[in-house]
Length: 232
Image (tube, rainbow, N blue to C red; front, side):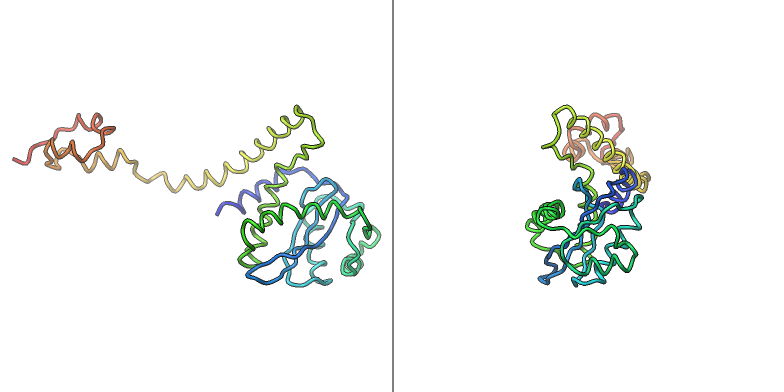
C-alpha cells in the first residue's frame, strides 16, 4: 500500500548517478506468460530505470531509453548494451548513437550481475501476477535496493558502518511521511480506555461481582473510582 509512496520519497533524496550506463533485458514470467524486463544500471550497480514489455524490439528499447533520459539529471557518457540491434535503432532515433558502446565479453557483466536480485525475488514470489503488477513491484524493489546497496566487499568495516547509518537515516525520513499521513485520520478514534469508561459508567447499574468478572485486571484500578450501584 505504501510502497510506491516510500519509493517516490527515496528517489527524491538520492544523489545524481554515474554517467556510464549499462542496459540489458531478461525474461520473466507473469501469469504463466513470458515477458521481457528491460533494465538500466550504472557502473556501480544502481538501478536507474526498468520497463516490463511483452516484446523484445525497438519499441520497447525506445520506451526504456526515453524513461531513462527523462528521469536522470545527468547526461550519459557511454551506454553499454549487448549485440541486440534494437538498442542501436532506438539510440539513432533519439540522436544518441555517439555514446553507444556495444558490449562484448565482460563489458556487460555489470548489467548481467544486476539481474540476480530479481531472479531471487521471482523465485520466492513464484512469478508475478501481471505485467503491471511486476512493473509496480520491481520499481519499488529497485529503489529500496539502491538505498541499501553498499558493495560491502569493497569497503572496510568503519566505512560500511558510516554508509549504513546514512542509508537508515534516508529510509527513516522517507517512511515517516506516509506513516504520518496514515495516523492523521485516526486522531478522532476513541481509545480503549474511553470506550471502557463509557461502557462501565455509574449509570450502567452493574453489580460489583459482575464488574469484576467482565473488566480485565489491568483496568480494575482505573474503574475503581467509578461509583457502581447494585441492581437491587
